Amino acid sequence: MTSVNQQAEWSDLGPFQALGRIVQAFYAPRRLAEAIRERPNWVFPLLFSMLLSFVVAAALIRRPEWQQTLQKAVESSGQKLGELEKVQLLHALRAVSWAFFLVAPVLGNLFIAVLLWGTTVMLEGQVGFIPVFSLQLHAQMVTLIPQTIGLGWVLGQRGTDLSRQDLPLPSSLGYFLPAAGVAPSVRALAGSIDFFGLW
Image 1 (tube, rainbow, N blue to C red):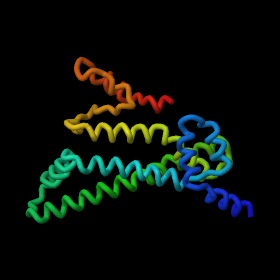
Image 2: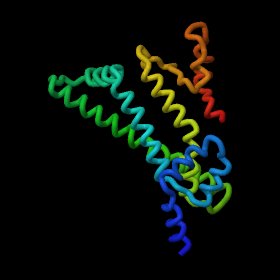
Image 3: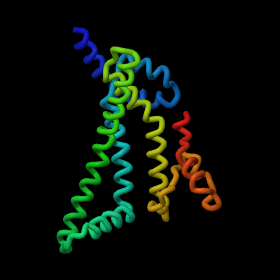
Image 4: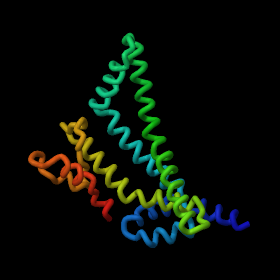
């Protein structure tokens, strides 16, 4: 009977309340953790992370650099293909790219949540998977949302070279370093320091 009541409570959270929880991760993480402990929700934040991944995919796959990368992959396959076969293979690679961007948040979040849940069970004993999964989904939003906005801004800039290995996001310290005169190791370290991640 208790599990039925808990499931009813979990499914009772409306979309605006769920969105409010995501916003709450930025300014009141302790209250958010307490609310998740009482009423965990995972469907909305998981769908929201898939939406962010879809936005990144839409911005990235349209870029000419992405098309050139796919064409190079087709040409370097070593097979002698006709023009029609190359076009079909390019369409298949685009479809696989879309599928990857949409499935990656689900599989990645499940994998991280299983690791966190296993660690929590070993340290604290009996803990349900859903509260841990919900907490992990909400906690990642603090970095996921700013990084998606920053990546969208970078992709929207004309003349941005996406082939650079050290392309920093606007939310990282590396973005504010000068273009020349900085050691690659310092640039890589600064690029890994995310302001929202420190938060």
